[in-house]
View 1 (cartoon, rainbow, N blue to C red):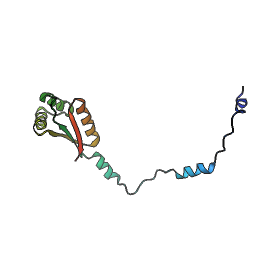
View 2: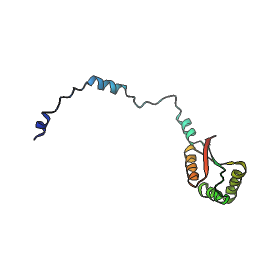
View 3: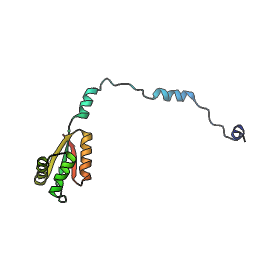
View 4: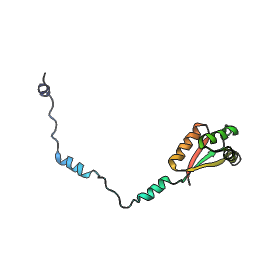
Length: 123
């Protein structure tokens, strides 16, 4: 059976209305730049270190383990890691980093992966 023979039994479709297609094409937005947006200001905001990473106290993790995690994830030296660990232990929380939003999200994700209770907030 040829392709023409198989199409003889097919139902006739409604014809395409070109005026509707043109109206839809005319209504779709183009790529226009907005004069109100300051690109340099947006870039400064995106890369500003306006996000704090906070580690909260918990009754589960040992102090030595918390120092180890700070050294491994945040590349802190022994003295700084111990100071932040004591701050978490004594005050209930410690701001361990101030970074861009994307980097703060990564740090929080890695700290949580090690079992620490970490959050981030905008400064």
